[in-house]
Image (cartoon, rainbow, N blue to C red; front, side, top):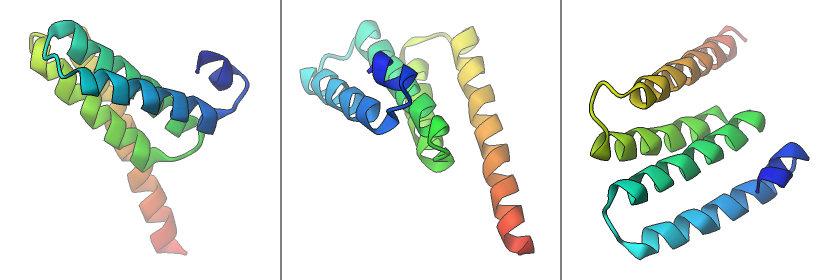
Length: 104
């Protein structure tokens, strides 16, 4: 998946991440490692969606990242803050897109 990202083959990378996510979710183990692995995969998927200019899909992935982080990390963990900041950035992009469409 990493190589596909580097080569700008985001759809291929997403398919790999989705398969990895499916495997991890099927394991059904609720542990810190499990939640953080899911969060990491969703974060990588979010990056690919951003590269494809699919902000809504990226935001949906980040919501999953945040949910998994909040399930196992303390509320003041820097990772949670970083995810919230990324989400705010994407929400701002979506607002700008909407405002731009409304003007035209």
